[in-house]
Image 1 (cartoon, helix red, strand yellow):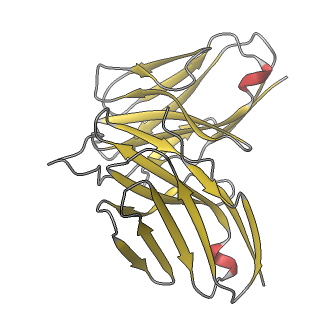
Image 2 (tube, one colour):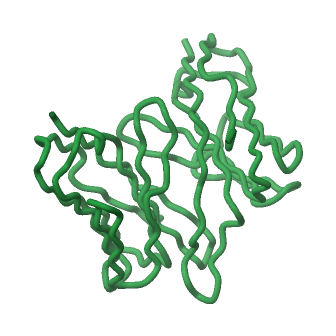
Length: 120
Length: 111
């Protein structure tokens, strides 16, 4: 029961360094997401991919890039890390985010365990 | 911008007590979810409510969606240390297929 797997779990970077967070899901979900979680700020959406081959910006996309490599994998890249990007990053997946028949979405976001990133 | 305000932000209670926490917005949502997050892990879905006025029970947890679909409450009966965690509400807007999270409520249940 792997679900959503993120790597690495912990990473320390120096300002200006680059890195990629990897995410893979084994539930055949169409949609994948990257969130960051900071104390007192809740979960904020960075980027999402509604389906394979598409990506869109979320609330806080600046300083990040993403790649939907295939249906299973969605990576998040920091090209030049800044201390403000110190955070816990969560990858999630779900069935397509849309309502049916005028009702709300009755799906579920499945989250990975998180990647704790510190930028010095 | 659709905001979900959760209250209280922090809550520390004794085992066996009852509690109610809230998720409020000025916006209407098509559906609303509650997730629980334990330290070092990702959030896990507890419930989805889709109809105004709907009440759902999950063992000792009771969730209610407001009649106007702008707010929700979570009531826990006889809280246990295992209920400790961060409770997040998330509202879905059908018009733009957007899921918005609140900032969460940190609950600590002392033995």
